[in-house]
Image 1 (cartoon, each protein chain N blue to C red):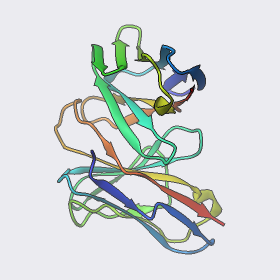
Image 2 (image 1 turned 180 degrees about the vertical axis):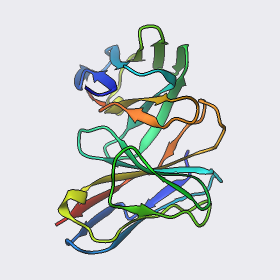
Image 3 (image 1 turned 90 degrees about the vertical axis):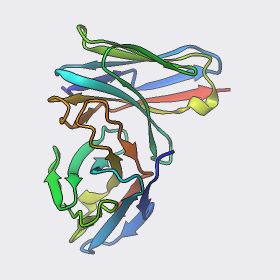
Image 4 (image 1 turned 120 degrees about the vertical axis):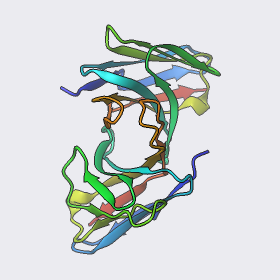
Length: 110
Length: 115
């Protein structure tokens, strides 16, 4: 079992829908990252969370440290949101390396 | 936008060849990383560096080697490529903030196919 599990693995939505991607982890962490990977392979960091909630545009990320769970929400989804969304956690204190989930492939249809 | 570059973007090569994947960043970051990612799978750390002349092996065993002679440059070398090395290789860098708040910036990746 991976230390970082994401669900769903694949998600297809219609433009405008509200989307939720989930991430559960089984290790103690100092931070959790949400990343976006485009078809060409490039990865962009969306959020870094250690508690609570962050919002950037149409993206919202939440984390519940006690439940070891984080969610990434996309409001008013758009075809350009189509990408793989990756959850990664930093374990072992501030100098720990990142542990990655397998990603959730999102496809938003017009 | 991150200033981290990888070349080549795509490489098809025969078994037994020596290859070097280049990674450069212009942000002055001390920390650099190499990840390997198979299709549909998670990223695995294969090498990292905390600065010039510092290199460490990552969580995933790899037959590749790295060097860090200059801050901005972190090349990865395979002495004798094999089909099992076919994968995507992603380079990343981050400031050494010594806190959990550091963000990694990723390059565009190199897709390697060994025939």
